[in-house]
Length: 113
Image (cartoon, rainbow, N blue to C red):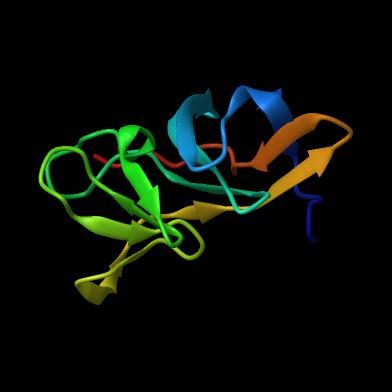
């Protein structure tokens, strides 16, 4: 049985200037939402290298550069530009009226020991 994807409102369209990102807590995760070329994109906010917030990085040509050590990730598909085998998670985004919404699955109910 497939469940419908649940979207969560994060901000108004005008809250993220073009070419910038902002971080939002959703379902126990921190998600970076970027406004680039009139569209919104969402990826995991934490750089897998040292945990820097990607939402604070510079965006150029659809790529965000980590502000700590310059790792670069596509905001469209999460791939690390220097090694496409590594990715950060991406999330569906939609705009409803003037509200930006992101779909982030709830944390799994299974715990790891």
